[in-house]
Length: 233
Ligand SMILES: Nc1ncnc2c1ncn2[C@@H]1O[C@H](COP(=O)(O)OP(=O)(O)OP(=O)(O)O)[C@@H](O)[C@H]1O
Ligand SMILES: [Mg+2]
Image (cartoon, rainbow, N blue to C red; front, top):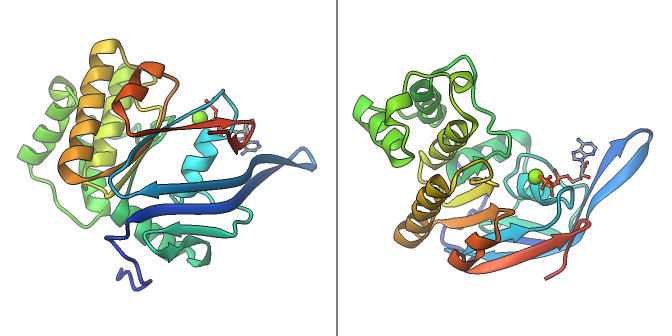
């Protein structure tokens, strides 16, 4: 699908939110989880988001990545496009082309092997991956020996690395990663961080990464702290 929405793929501000609010309807009442979020992410920035469990980090990432919608926002722009005004198919098109998403719960397809999960990610974007390409992608996350395993036949950390590989497959301009190292040992955490930093530096990929690991903050450009649905610094 043609992106005819005045998208500016070189816009200096990749994401911009003003007074973004989100509440869930739960148990007959409204539960407010994001309050008046203001956020600007510049092109090529590597930003970490930290905050206590339940403060709204995943919800914010899902909204920025067009996986969920805000209830209201004065402004919610992605590369110059007002995403609040997009219809469902336009949102899907922007997401597929511009965004890579690493879900906190991975969202891998259990019936497919590791390599077929990756092949599907190419296919969704109209591309056919060669065996050599798939092999290379698996190697970047240290999964060369697990290509034919299905997610349930992989350790949690292996599943997490497969989810990261899948999100990176189309070299997305914007990578949103929800605790991408949350289940990894220190060796694999270092491997994944090296990978993210290299994509950020070499391809100018913009990255927002939710993390609970304070040691990773030294490797990013900026830290955004959240508490109780607000950005506190
Ligand atoms: N579908 C839903 N319906 C009702 N409440 C929800 C729903 N999804 C999330 N919540 C609530 O919204 C709040 C924010 O959730 P969110 O997943 O964004 O937190 P988080 O900061 O990512 O936490 P964690 O660090 O544990 O992953 C939580 O209190 C959660 O219980
Ligand atoms: Mg979360």
